[in-house]
Image 1: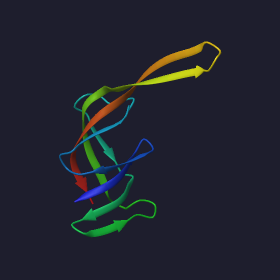
Image 2 (image 1 turned 30 degrees about the vertical axis):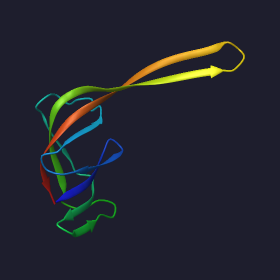
Image 3 (image 1 turned 180 degrees about the vertical axis):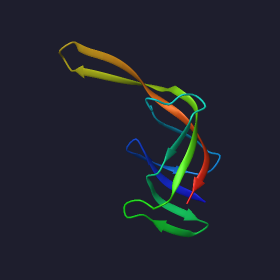
Length: 105
């Protein structure tokens, strides 16, 4: 059984026991329990329920494994040819690592 859940404006496929890396959640502490009730789709062994816009009574219960994890570095390079202009900028996105404890559908 899996569900499609919306977390911080992004959609994720959630199954029990899996880990998710979502955009940083501000007030999340390590070991805290977080619930998400914006479940858009439920697949229960081939029986698909699509919400309009959400499935009523469905939610995902997660535990915060790590409140802040940095992603891979992304290099942003700007250049204007023949002008001698070059600029290199790096960025590492902050994520929150969640472990899915329970999927209620």
